[in-house]
Image (tube, rainbow, N blue to C red):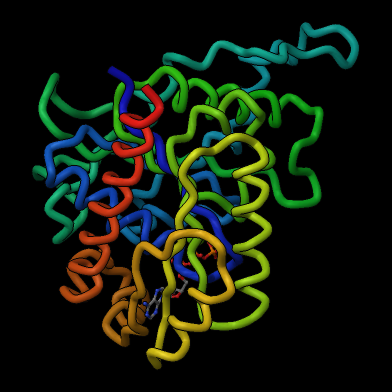
Length: 288
Ligand SMILES: Nc1ncnc2c1ncn2[C@@H]1O[C@H](COP(=O)(O)OP(=O)(O)OP(=O)(O)O)[C@@H](O)[C@H]1O
Ligand SMILES: [Mg+2]
């Protein structure tokens, strides 16, 4: 059976990476085999897992030689042609990092995280750092674009893991096939019109592209009225309202895993995760 696929979007800085890291750890603790994908041009999901920068993997989008080999744009290539469907199915295993699923440090064992690590079976938490093409070039007809799209399509449509994708903003660059394979799109929103506006646009786009479940998480809330305002303005299910947390901010400063930083935030996100899974399950049951 294919694992559930969840994409997390929202305006810059709202807390997408924070939510993605905590959920990845919670799902792994629930026994899911989790593949967390960093698909943001500024890759920092590794940091949110508490992985030191020197152990942070190089984003696949920066591996020029690999992309050239796979898309057929190496030195022997002729003209400007490149493969639109490069082979990528072997790459997740080669390039993921295994992360400590307890969330209280970066490693499972003394020699983790390491590339392609892990034993067969059992719940694991793996991080694949893809990166993305910066906004100006998003959706470009270039080898990098084809490579990224192929990897996202592969992970979303073919992998058995529960996949969480940390996005730069929305889903439009992913390609129709992979967007339609997403079970749920979750938009993170902080108090403020710009963030709400962006969340609404992303949610609308996701729905138009065929994503069945779209939910929202309000983050960095300092007063109850802010949650009410967000709920009133967004026309998608509000899965959670997370308080502004100095501990979360401090963990970022200290390059510590966000999971161990704030028990209340983790517990609220646990409820949100359960709500989301109910939503996905309910729709699936009613669909059949
Ligand atoms: N509930 C919270 N309370 C306090 N600080 C928070 C909270 N959630 C996130 N932050 C902080 O806000 C900043 C942005 O969070 P995060 O990196 O998760 O957002 P993002 O949406 O992924 O950003 P980007 O668009 O840059 O990828 C970080 O410094 C993070 O520690
Ligand atoms: Mg981020």
